[in-house]
Amino acid sequence: MKKISIIALALAVLVSFGCAKDHLDTYPTSSTSPGTILGSADAAKVAVNGLGKLMHRQYGAYGQGYNGEGTVRLYYGEYLGNNLMKGNSTGFQNSANGNLYESNTATLGSYAWYYYYMIIGNANTIIKEIDNAEGTDADRAYIKAQALTYRAYAYFNLVQIYGRRWSDGSDKPSCVLRLTGEEPDNLDRSTSGEVYTQIYADLDEAISLFNASGKANSRPGTHVVDLDVAYGIYARVALTREDWNKALQYAQQARKKYPLQSVNDELAGFSNPTGEWIWSLYGAEDETLYFYDYFCYAAYNAQTSTTRNYPILISRHLFDQIPATDIRRAWWLDPAGYEGTFNTNTMKASAQNSKNKLWVYGQDYAKNVRGHELLTTHCIFAYMNMKNSNNIQPGIGHLCLMRASEMLLIEAEAQYRLKNEDAARALLVELNATSKRDPAYTCTASGDALMEQIKLYRGIELWSEGFNWFDLKRWGDSIDRKTYKNGGSWMSSYAVSFGPNEKNNWTFCIPRNETDYNKGITSTANN
Image (tube, rainbow, N blue to C red; front, side):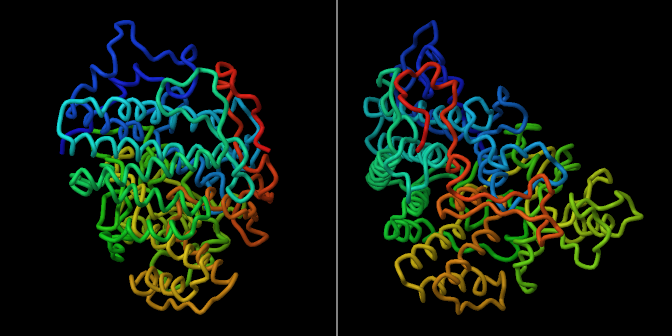
């Protein structure tokens, strides 16, 4: 497989990434125009592949661990939520406890802004120039559709992070809409409603162009954006916007050609595409990010200091709700039978050597049950991650961004919201019993209890895949973390509770790197 081309080397010096030009002046002194670089469809194809590369690269200015999309799924989607914790680490305490939402200088608050506007800036240039590029109408349509899809995806994440939840914030300010690269430097934020309208428009146009191109699903692999990816993003956006009919429609379209993966694939480590993967980031030895990569932090077998000492763990509260008949329990180290041999504040085995039964059990489980031998320096924790593994050290693997199981769960929630409870129950049975993930699963729940089942199985099936915080925010559910003594497994320093209308409504402030140079922003508040 050819290496993915890197647009950042060519276009990152040509377009503004969201802040005013005097902050990030991106035109080179040689002044080669974007139209010259994107003068042909072949060049534009390289550029659009580079948008995917921007989602998987080192962002060294932010520090080790900042790698594009993998950072967003862990640092925002999981570390801020209820279901995943980093064993024995207090490094994310401020962010996880909601203390950084109102900071305009925090790294976490500025990273997503910088990262997604980098994608938007490059996508805008492609969208602007592609109509005049040499090549066939089909090629131009296909490339423009991909760029529109990337732009829609980036704005969707920005509006979730920097805007209020839809139910109480559609008329509140969120992010700055830059669509041509010719907007004034000083430009105020648009409301969430306006941003969602633009996202819909981008996806509608992308879908039309994919179909017009005649090669809507002709990609060489899941790392390339195609029509089904656009459908899947549309389903996510509509779900978050509480547009249930569209969420149902596009989730069904997105997963039509992607059967739920087998039990063997469920247990294979989530680092290689399977038949249910709709979208992923390419990750192989020739694309290594070394110690920056997502798998360096999320793979149980990664030989990195952060994983050896601070592996990610599932919340005991969630784990205890997984039926004994469910094969997904194998994704985590169940300490049943080993109580008393781990620290009930950190979940770490009391002794990290062969004198401790839990340590021996964990080492053996990783090697003989999950298939990857750990180093003797790997610390063992109760409830530690055994779901994700990497292919090659230190953290190389393909990162799944979208799969059929997620789309099915979107369908189930949309059906429930549309009062089609029989259809919602049938979808849960399809996910769990029919797929053999839990052959004993049945569903008779109705009303609020049925919605709780949908939430539960989103938590189980999509654990560590970057959805928990975004789900809690859009549902208006609370952060509620309990210590081991109180039925959970959170370290006492993380065991906090706060509601959806506290902590700045879980909405990050616009970073100062933007407001220092964009004087058009009239207010940084989101209320």
